[in-house]
Length: 100
Image 1 (cartoon, one colour):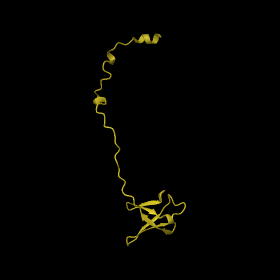
Image 2: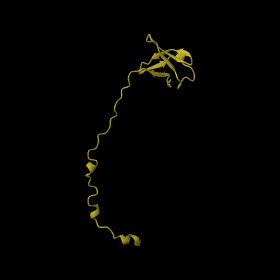
Image 3: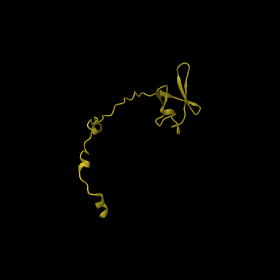
Image 4: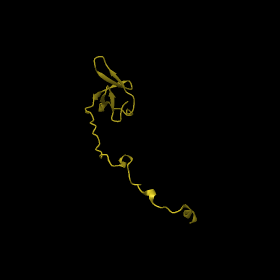
């Protein structure tokens, strides 16, 4: 499959169609890639051979994104104390809430 930048992958490598060989409606179309017995790589588009070259792109280095360190005190493994004493306070009687 020809990419938007007129490149395709074969055998783990990227190849690009030479600018003079580019035709309209070529993007996102199928391309026939032939690896000959003598080691030559040829590409055919719509029944004719197109000149290709290996892309000079190196491997893309994946840089891990810098992230904030994990907070160790968050919930403290279920030992949070923010509700301690909540149910110890007196509440108004239930009948008072219906009288208003």
